[in-house]
Length: 280
Image (cartoon, rainbow, N blue to C red; front, side, top):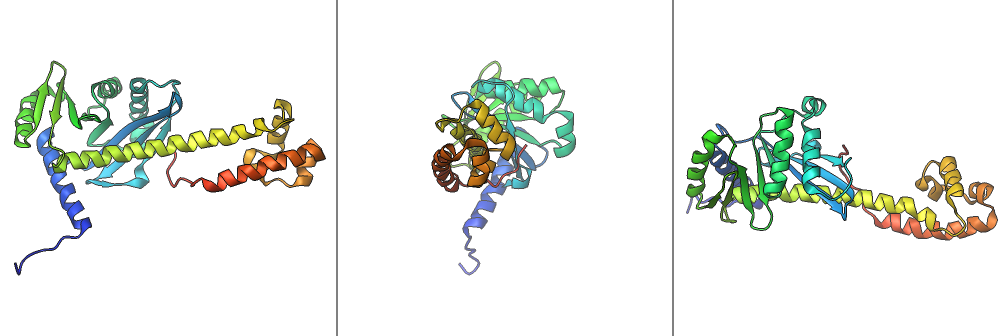
Protein backbone atom coordinates (compact mmCIF):
# COMPACT_ATOMS: atom_id res chain seq x y z
CA UNK A 1 0.00 0.00 0.00
CA UNK A 2 2.89 2.37 0.74
CA UNK A 3 4.02 1.91 -2.86
CA UNK A 4 0.56 2.44 -4.33
CA UNK A 5 0.47 4.87 -7.27
CA UNK A 6 -2.66 6.94 -7.88
CA UNK A 7 -3.06 7.70 -11.59
CA UNK A 8 -4.67 10.82 -12.99
CA UNK A 9 -7.00 10.63 -16.01
CA UNK A 10 -4.11 11.71 -18.26
CA UNK A 11 -1.86 8.98 -16.86
CA UNK A 12 -4.58 6.38 -17.41
CA UNK A 13 -4.89 7.65 -21.00
CA UNK A 14 -1.14 7.38 -21.52
CA UNK A 15 -1.08 3.88 -20.08
CA UNK A 16 -4.00 2.76 -22.26
CA UNK A 17 -2.38 4.34 -25.31
CA UNK A 18 0.92 2.55 -24.71
CA UNK A 19 -0.80 -0.78 -24.13
CA UNK A 20 -2.95 -0.23 -27.23
CA UNK A 21 0.14 0.38 -29.36
CA UNK A 22 1.79 -2.73 -27.92
CA UNK A 23 -1.27 -4.84 -28.73
CA UNK A 24 -1.45 -3.33 -32.22
CA UNK A 25 2.23 -4.12 -32.79
CA UNK A 26 1.66 -7.70 -31.72
CA UNK A 27 -1.50 -8.17 -33.79
CA UNK A 28 -0.10 -6.71 -37.02
CA UNK A 29 3.37 -8.22 -36.57
CA UNK A 30 5.27 -4.94 -36.48
CA UNK A 31 8.88 -4.99 -35.30
CA UNK A 32 8.16 -1.95 -33.13
CA UNK A 33 5.04 0.04 -32.16
CA UNK A 34 3.70 2.05 -35.12
CA UNK A 35 4.62 5.66 -34.45
CA UNK A 36 2.59 7.53 -37.08
CA UNK A 37 -0.95 6.32 -37.74
CA UNK A 38 -3.20 8.17 -40.21
CA UNK A 39 -7.00 7.86 -40.04
CA UNK A 40 -9.32 8.58 -42.99
CA UNK A 41 -13.05 9.24 -43.26
CA UNK A 42 -15.52 10.61 -45.83
CA UNK A 43 -18.35 13.05 -45.06
CA UNK A 44 -21.15 14.45 -47.22
CA UNK A 45 -24.85 15.32 -47.20
CA UNK A 46 -26.74 13.50 -49.96
CA UNK A 47 -23.69 13.73 -52.20
CA UNK A 48 -23.08 17.48 -51.75
CA UNK A 49 -20.03 19.17 -50.21
CA UNK A 50 -18.21 15.82 -50.09
CA UNK A 51 -14.95 15.94 -48.14
CA UNK A 52 -12.36 13.59 -46.69
CA UNK A 53 -10.30 13.92 -43.54
CA UNK A 54 -6.80 12.79 -42.66
CA UNK A 55 -5.96 12.80 -38.96
CA UNK A 56 -2.53 11.92 -37.60
CA UNK A 57 -1.71 10.18 -34.33
CA UNK A 58 1.93 10.24 -33.26
CA UNK A 59 2.83 7.58 -30.69
CA UNK A 60 -0.85 7.20 -29.89
CA UNK A 61 -1.58 10.91 -29.40
CA UNK A 62 -3.27 13.32 -31.87
CA UNK A 63 -0.92 15.57 -33.83
CA UNK A 64 -3.42 18.24 -34.87
CA UNK A 65 -0.87 20.36 -36.70
CA UNK A 66 -0.51 17.49 -39.19
CA UNK A 67 -4.24 17.07 -39.87
CA UNK A 68 -5.31 17.60 -43.46
CA UNK A 69 -8.66 17.76 -45.20
CA UNK A 70 -9.59 17.23 -48.83
CA UNK A 71 -12.43 18.64 -50.88
CA UNK A 72 -13.48 15.82 -53.19
CA UNK A 73 -13.14 16.46 -56.92
CA UNK A 74 -15.37 13.55 -57.98
CA UNK A 75 -19.08 14.41 -57.50
CA UNK A 76 -21.66 12.16 -55.87
CA UNK A 77 -21.98 10.17 -52.66
CA UNK A 78 -19.99 7.01 -53.42
CA UNK A 79 -17.81 6.44 -50.34
CA UNK A 80 -15.77 3.78 -52.14
CA UNK A 81 -14.90 6.10 -55.04
CA UNK A 82 -14.05 8.96 -52.70
CA UNK A 83 -11.89 6.77 -50.46
CA UNK A 84 -9.96 5.75 -53.56
CA UNK A 85 -9.60 9.41 -54.52
CA UNK A 86 -8.31 10.62 -51.17
CA UNK A 87 -5.74 7.81 -50.81
CA UNK A 88 -4.60 8.41 -54.40
CA UNK A 89 -4.09 12.10 -53.64
CA UNK A 90 -2.44 11.35 -50.29
CA UNK A 91 0.08 9.06 -51.99
CA UNK A 92 0.97 11.53 -54.72
CA UNK A 93 4.67 12.29 -54.84
CA UNK A 94 4.16 15.92 -53.77
CA UNK A 95 2.31 14.96 -50.58
CA UNK A 96 4.75 12.16 -49.78
CA UNK A 97 7.59 14.70 -49.91
CA UNK A 98 5.64 17.13 -47.72
CA UNK A 99 4.26 14.72 -45.13
CA UNK A 100 6.28 11.51 -45.42
CA UNK A 101 4.50 8.18 -45.01
CA UNK A 102 2.67 6.69 -42.02
CA UNK A 103 3.46 3.37 -40.40
CA UNK A 104 -0.22 2.44 -40.68
CA UNK A 105 -3.35 3.64 -42.49
CA UNK A 106 -6.63 3.28 -40.59
CA UNK A 107 -9.66 3.40 -42.88
CA UNK A 108 -13.06 4.23 -41.41
CA UNK A 109 -15.28 1.49 -42.81
CA UNK A 110 -15.48 -2.17 -43.68
CA UNK A 111 -14.37 -4.31 -46.59
CA UNK A 112 -15.63 -1.97 -49.32
CA UNK A 113 -13.84 1.13 -48.05
CA UNK A 114 -10.67 -0.84 -47.30
CA UNK A 115 -10.70 -2.44 -50.76
CA UNK A 116 -10.92 1.00 -52.39
CA UNK A 117 -8.03 2.30 -50.27
CA UNK A 118 -5.91 -0.76 -51.02
CA UNK A 119 -6.56 -0.37 -54.74
CA UNK A 120 -5.34 3.24 -54.61
CA UNK A 121 -2.29 2.20 -52.58
CA UNK A 122 -1.37 -0.58 -54.98
CA UNK A 123 -1.80 1.72 -57.98
CA UNK A 124 0.59 4.20 -56.39
CA UNK A 125 3.24 1.52 -55.87
CA UNK A 126 3.51 2.32 -52.15
CA UNK A 127 3.93 -0.54 -49.67
CA UNK A 128 2.31 0.51 -46.39
CA UNK A 129 -0.07 -1.56 -44.23
CA UNK A 130 -3.77 -0.64 -44.19
CA UNK A 131 -6.59 -1.86 -41.98
CA UNK A 132 -10.24 -0.90 -41.63
CA UNK A 133 -12.48 -0.45 -38.61
CA UNK A 134 -16.08 -1.37 -39.40
CA UNK A 135 -18.56 0.76 -37.46
CA UNK A 136 -21.40 -1.65 -36.79
CA UNK A 137 -19.50 -4.25 -34.77
CA UNK A 138 -16.18 -2.41 -34.32
CA UNK A 139 -14.45 -5.17 -36.26
CA UNK A 140 -10.87 -4.78 -37.41
CA UNK A 141 -10.73 -5.58 -41.12
CA UNK A 142 -7.49 -6.91 -42.60
CA UNK A 143 -6.83 -8.00 -46.16
CA UNK A 144 -5.44 -11.53 -46.57
CA UNK A 145 -2.56 -10.10 -48.64
CA UNK A 146 -1.47 -8.05 -45.64
CA UNK A 147 1.27 -9.63 -46.56
CA UNK A 148 0.29 -13.29 -46.91
CA UNK A 149 3.22 -14.52 -44.81
CA UNK A 150 1.81 -12.81 -41.71
CA UNK A 151 -1.79 -14.04 -41.91
CA UNK A 152 -1.23 -17.12 -39.73
CA UNK A 153 0.69 -15.03 -37.20
CA UNK A 154 -2.13 -12.49 -37.09
CA UNK A 155 -4.64 -15.25 -36.33
CA UNK A 156 -2.48 -16.47 -33.45
CA UNK A 157 -2.10 -12.95 -32.05
CA UNK A 158 -5.85 -12.34 -32.34
CA UNK A 159 -6.59 -15.38 -30.22
CA UNK A 160 -4.28 -14.02 -27.52
CA UNK A 161 -6.51 -10.93 -27.42
CA UNK A 162 -9.59 -13.15 -26.93
CA UNK A 163 -10.84 -12.14 -30.36
CA UNK A 164 -13.41 -13.79 -32.57
CA UNK A 165 -11.97 -14.27 -36.03
CA UNK A 166 -13.92 -14.67 -39.27
CA UNK A 167 -11.64 -15.52 -42.19
CA UNK A 168 -12.71 -15.47 -45.84
CA UNK A 169 -10.85 -15.72 -49.11
CA UNK A 170 -9.92 -12.03 -49.20
CA UNK A 171 -10.40 -10.60 -45.70
CA UNK A 172 -10.03 -11.36 -42.03
CA UNK A 173 -12.57 -9.83 -39.65
CA UNK A 174 -11.28 -9.61 -36.08
CA UNK A 175 -13.80 -8.92 -33.34
CA UNK A 176 -11.81 -7.93 -30.25
CA UNK A 177 -13.62 -7.11 -26.97
CA UNK A 178 -14.40 -3.39 -26.84
CA UNK A 179 -12.73 -3.16 -23.44
CA UNK A 180 -9.30 -3.89 -24.96
CA UNK A 181 -6.76 -1.09 -25.16
CA UNK A 182 -6.24 -1.81 -28.86
CA UNK A 183 -9.89 -1.24 -29.79
CA UNK A 184 -10.05 1.91 -27.68
CA UNK A 185 -6.99 3.31 -29.46
CA UNK A 186 -8.43 2.59 -32.92
CA UNK A 187 -11.79 4.03 -31.88
CA UNK A 188 -10.15 7.28 -30.80
CA UNK A 189 -8.42 7.62 -34.17
CA UNK A 190 -11.57 6.66 -36.09
CA UNK A 191 -13.80 9.00 -34.08
CA UNK A 192 -11.34 11.88 -34.55
CA UNK A 193 -11.23 11.35 -38.32
CA UNK A 194 -15.03 11.34 -38.36
CA UNK A 195 -15.26 14.52 -36.26
CA UNK A 196 -12.73 16.32 -38.44
CA UNK A 197 -14.47 15.29 -41.68
CA UNK A 198 -17.88 16.38 -40.39
CA UNK A 199 -16.51 19.75 -39.21
CA UNK A 200 -15.07 20.50 -42.65
CA UNK A 201 -18.25 19.37 -44.39
CA UNK A 202 -20.22 21.73 -42.13
CA UNK A 203 -17.92 24.64 -42.98
CA UNK A 204 -18.47 24.08 -46.71
CA UNK A 205 -22.21 23.67 -46.31
CA UNK A 206 -22.56 26.85 -44.25
CA UNK A 207 -20.33 28.71 -46.72
CA UNK A 208 -22.52 27.61 -49.61
CA UNK A 209 -25.62 28.70 -47.73
CA UNK A 210 -24.07 32.10 -47.08
CA UNK A 211 -23.22 32.49 -50.76
CA UNK A 212 -26.84 31.77 -51.71
CA UNK A 213 -28.59 34.21 -49.35
CA UNK A 214 -28.11 37.08 -51.81
CA UNK A 215 -30.25 35.34 -54.44
CA UNK A 216 -33.18 35.32 -51.99
CA UNK A 217 -33.38 39.12 -51.85
CA UNK A 218 -36.32 40.39 -53.99
CA UNK A 219 -35.18 42.54 -56.88
CA UNK A 220 -31.61 41.18 -56.82
CA UNK A 221 -31.20 39.26 -60.06
CA UNK A 222 -28.13 37.54 -61.46
CA UNK A 223 -26.84 40.67 -63.20
CA UNK A 224 -27.17 42.81 -60.05
CA UNK A 225 -25.63 40.07 -57.94
CA UNK A 226 -22.60 39.94 -60.24
CA UNK A 227 -22.26 43.74 -60.01
CA UNK A 228 -22.31 43.58 -56.21
CA UNK A 229 -19.80 40.73 -56.05
CA UNK A 230 -17.52 42.49 -58.53
CA UNK A 231 -17.71 45.75 -56.53
CA UNK A 232 -17.30 44.31 -53.01
CA UNK A 233 -15.40 41.10 -53.73
CA UNK A 234 -17.69 38.64 -51.93
CA UNK A 235 -20.93 38.34 -50.00
CA UNK A 236 -18.93 39.11 -46.86
CA UNK A 237 -17.83 42.36 -48.50
CA UNK A 238 -21.47 43.17 -49.24
CA UNK A 239 -22.32 42.59 -45.58
CA UNK A 240 -19.67 45.13 -44.58
CA UNK A 241 -20.57 47.73 -47.22
CA UNK A 242 -22.06 51.11 -46.27
CA UNK A 243 -25.52 52.20 -47.39
CA UNK A 244 -24.09 54.93 -49.58
CA UNK A 245 -21.89 52.42 -51.38
CA UNK A 246 -24.82 50.06 -51.95
CA UNK A 247 -27.09 52.85 -53.16
CA UNK A 248 -24.70 53.63 -56.02
CA UNK A 249 -25.55 50.22 -57.49
CA UNK A 250 -29.03 49.45 -56.14
CA UNK A 251 -30.71 52.73 -55.46
CA UNK A 252 -32.35 53.75 -52.18
CA UNK A 253 -35.35 51.36 -52.10
CA UNK A 254 -33.44 48.19 -52.99
CA UNK A 255 -30.67 49.12 -50.57
CA UNK A 256 -33.22 49.40 -47.75
CA UNK A 257 -34.61 45.99 -48.66
CA UNK A 258 -31.14 44.49 -48.90
CA UNK A 259 -30.22 45.95 -45.52
CA UNK A 260 -33.05 43.93 -43.90
CA UNK A 261 -31.54 40.73 -45.28
CA UNK A 262 -28.04 41.80 -44.26
CA UNK A 263 -29.13 42.23 -40.63
CA UNK A 264 -30.55 38.70 -40.63
CA UNK A 265 -27.41 37.32 -42.27
CA UNK A 266 -25.12 38.99 -39.74
CA UNK A 267 -27.06 37.33 -36.91
CA UNK A 268 -26.59 33.97 -38.65
CA UNK A 269 -22.88 34.62 -39.20
CA UNK A 270 -22.34 35.55 -35.56
CA UNK A 271 -23.94 32.30 -34.41
CA UNK A 272 -21.45 30.15 -36.33
CA UNK A 273 -18.21 29.00 -34.71
CA UNK A 274 -15.13 29.62 -36.85
CA UNK A 275 -13.22 26.30 -37.25
CA UNK A 276 -9.66 26.13 -36.00
CA UNK A 277 -8.28 23.70 -38.58
CA UNK A 278 -5.62 23.33 -41.21
CA UNK A 279 -6.98 23.40 -44.76
CA UNK A 280 -5.75 21.19 -47.58
